[in-house]
Figure 1 (spheres, rainbow over the protein chains, first blue to last red):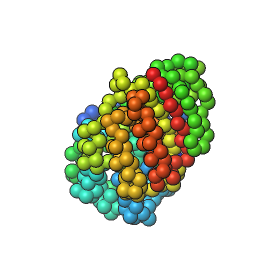
Figure 2 (figure 1 turned 45 degrees about the vertical axis):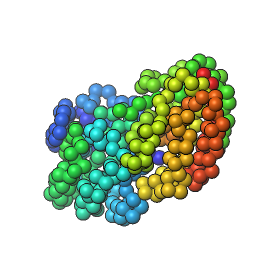
Figure 3 (figure 1 turned 90 degrees about the vertical axis):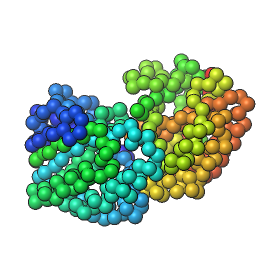
Figure 4 (figure 1 turned 60 degrees about the vertical axis):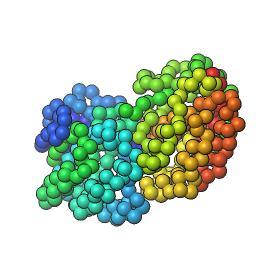
Length: 180
Length: 180
């Protein structure tokens, strides 16, 4: 079943916010800490911001691609994962107006989203949350976890994805970096 | 933008409920009328049931298929549309565990969901609402509108779709028929 997850920036939380930078469009108010809440509970009081998304079925991967991904991907919560990143993204209306085959083509055939990502697994653990159908300001909230030693690799991954055709459809992106 | 729509069965509403039949799995409590509410407002008080879904981007259609659909599909609310049907559906976990290419193959290549549907357009107007990512009991709420003269054609459409491979993944379905 889809899992509803809230990312709450404020005074409390497991993760310390090290940086919070706008990449495209409007940024976010500063906050010292972040909590990840996996429940359909009411919104937290007194938080600086809160964004929600649901894990859902995959939209673009073929069976072979998904098998390749599942064979190497690691779960969240590894003890070595002292670093995390939350990257909220909104894509343009032009993206959402594309048909399924057009979005798929850009996602993988020209942008190699999965192929690039696989190079950085299992070091980087990742979970995608969908917000658009919930009426949220961000279409996607992607959460990444990795160890100190894999921080340089993670920067490379983010830079490669931002250089793709797919990213030309991103109209808002914020980059939140965290430590446990 | 996705539009959140609530279908509220109860004592009030534009549509009179003529029948309300379980097709697969658990049915719904009886109610005399139905209202369709296009807003993110709070749930209605005193209703027998209420289900929500969002219109969203299409998941399976290619550009060519979507163009063919848009060329003939009609809007909701035609004055001749005195008949309506609300068909809430839930698919199995096995469906949602399929990869995108496998779901697409079943949807159109073997079940001809779009090809069959196109035969009954423009007579039947249709809008699909997604509920699964909202945590709703029904994955899909499909709303159909048609004229008295097209009622037999609509029955044919529903019967053809229920005979497809895609429908073997349906674990709950209710068929609600309405008149204005």
